[in-house]
Amino acid sequence: MSHSKNGFVSRGAHWFAALAGTALAGYPDSVLVADAPFNGRTVRFIAVIPDAQNRFARARDGEVGLIEGWHLARAVHELVAADQNKTDKTPLIAIVDVPSQAYGRREEAYGIHLALAAAAGAYAAARQAGHPVVALIVGKAMSGAFLAHGYQANRIVAFDDPEVMVHAMGKASAARITLRSVEALTALAETIPPMAYDIKNFASLGLLSASLNVVAPDTPDQTSLNLVYQSLEQMLASIAQESEHDLSSRLNAPHRQASKRVRELLRQQWKEEGPMAI
Amino acid sequence: MQTTLEPRLDSLLRQNSFIELGARERGRQLLDAGTMRELIGPFDRMHSPWLARQGVVTQSDDGVVVAKGLFNAQPCVVLAIEGAFQGGSLGEVGGAKIAGALELAAQDNRNGIPTMALILFETGGVRLQEANLGLAAIAEIHSAIVDLRRYQPVIGIVAGTVGCFGGMSIAAGLCSYLIVTREARIGLNGPAVIEQEAGIAEYDSRDRRFIWGITGGEQRALADLVDMLAEDDVQQIREQISQFAARGVPAQHRSEQTARFISALDQVDAATQATPEMARQIYTRGATA
Image 1 (cartoon, helix red, strand yellow):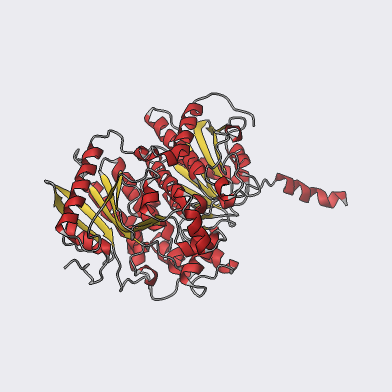
Image 2: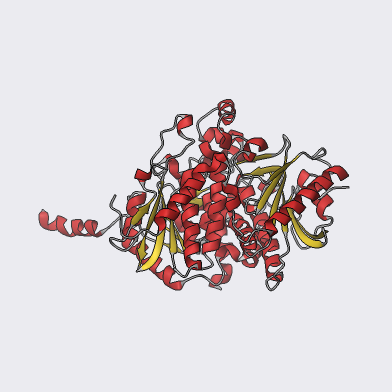
């Protein structure tokens, strides 16, 4: 059965079990880490899953909280340290199904921003050290949780599925902050691609390397698994072709022209001499 | 009358508030006198391509000033967020200005030019009108800080009064050194969002004393989650930056201290609601013993 080790079931837990097998001991029940064989080499898989017994009550539904952030960082740092003197760096695959960061008083008081910085920083450092990093979005990839677990990957792959969602903030809160109704926000999101919650609009921003038509997104069958394996292999092969370990491959979509233009202008103006009066 | 007022006026005139300055002037005053050059200034008209479509007035710098110059004669780029524009929120253009400048600073270092970076955080995080492009830009900012901090310290300043929230609080957490004032707040989630998601008993967004008690600059300094609590004074902040610049890249950044933080959090009684005192206690236990 594709249950997580604490008996709680989520998409992320199912896909972790199918791809990576049994999780390593020594991590909290909400953070799954395994080194599994993949296409003739070893790959480290990492997932954050729900844990109904999580000590921190605001992080029981798969949110990335204090404990999750720091242990994600640990799982990545330990791999980077182990591979320090190797030229062939172990790939990291983040299985992403995270509904949000944890919202709570304990979280703010104990510095959840730093816990998430630890995780994001660890993934970025791993990528920059030459570890191929792929994010496989099987469910939700929301806001700070996604920044901490997945967004630093060389490649992002997602299931083309209505349950898959990428966004900066849940609809109710986003509506409150922007002083709109949820209905108005949803209507606006249909005309402004970066505001949309669905994966097709996200793909139009050039941030996605592949979207997969998985027939069984909730319970991995062999056909779905084969499709995922094939895509992950393609991603690792294409990362291996690159000499730079940066995120510049994300800048090519028409909806990100301004991101590219800003960088061009900065490059032009960076080395000009002398102060410019404004 | 003049004789009694004169000393007070004199002291007031010598005070130079940093908080009261706009982003552009903050950059100018931190850099060595006469060395600031703004990149992608207002006349380049790189405003947000997304706000106007939603009936929101754009600003020709998109709320981010890229100020290049010298700091104590060292090449330096200041990324200053304008809290007065859209709450300092980061959209596609402003986010790309920060990420792109940090990327070039790292590139400089690989080419033997020791460019350092100062980031002036005054931001609510992602601009929700550009949601996913703001989030993507912030991921790129995180990446660029981690890249640059291998070569030069990346120094963050949260002066106030907006504070530093959302994905940009993660960016602040990645900085080599972080300077705050008493007016500053640093938190992952804005108070209104926590109240919306978790309820008013968990987080009362209107209780200013409570909010500053948890996320305020003084509390963050006492809990050792930042490196310096500074007065709201340009000269003092500049001197602090000088000290951190001289100290160089830390042996281990705070965000890399996994063993220390995991051990501290293991000792927390998570069943009990957090207090400012508990946060100070768990993170300073080893330091003062």
